[in-house]
Image (tube, rainbow, N blue to C red; front, side, top):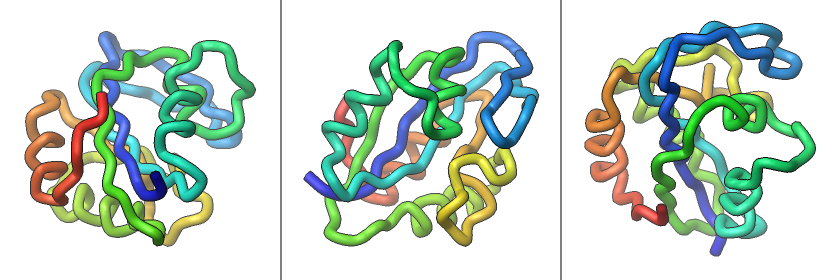
Length: 133
């Protein structure tokens, strides 16, 4: 299954985390939504994200070492739609971590913050994304 996905993460406490090329970043306690695409298979990509032992390849790998994955949403597509999804979070006014996960995108970020998970669920429902986990 090809398409785009959103990982919902919970950060239980405030902390500074070294995020590869971005350096040390402050993460407030709360919930984060990470937008990605997997044109070679969403299931395979999500399984990789869930593994504890892996090569630190992407910004999200560094964050997942400290945050708990609470849910995964996806939308099947033959084209990347992560830009549209990230823009929906921006338009809704969510805080974001600049440049996180957006190296190959025109979007300012692919990681968004909220104190509560519910606002993310509302956006994901409006985007017709299905829950996988």
